[in-house]
Image (tube, rainbow, N blue to C red; front, side, top):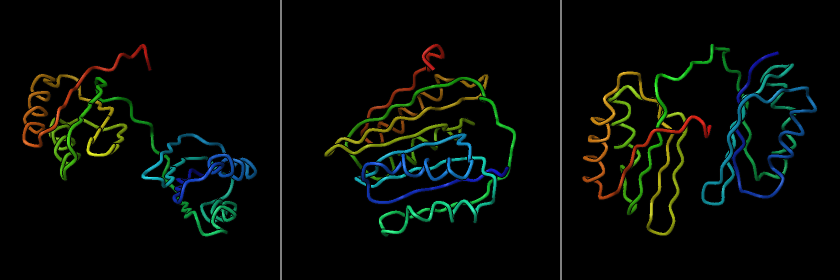
Length: 172
């Protein structure tokens, strides 16, 4: 078995997830990780799966998804690597305010400068309101108040609101 990453992109319609996973299951693939979202009416999915063949064999099995031209599918092998555990503590980063360029760059730059890792991030634009939600893993010993202060400074420059709260691990 080999590990592959599969991306599926295109105009949204019902049944994409069902058909993609049906085609993968028919090959004997085992889905390990996945994420899917809609981006302005466009479907975007990334899957990581163990497959019995290789990337080319898997791509051929998924070819029916692309036949009508509405979806683009790519498959590539990914190296098996040990799963890294969390750096330290999990936090939820939330940003909201008027949309403008540079919001994601500014707040993720603060997290990166603290040695933090973004483990999940989503953004949405609802009319003029921009919302960013991210799960952030900060290293043990991080001065969280300092990170919060740096985030507040970046948010003030951008004219948005920001919060950084610990994730309740009982909820996960």
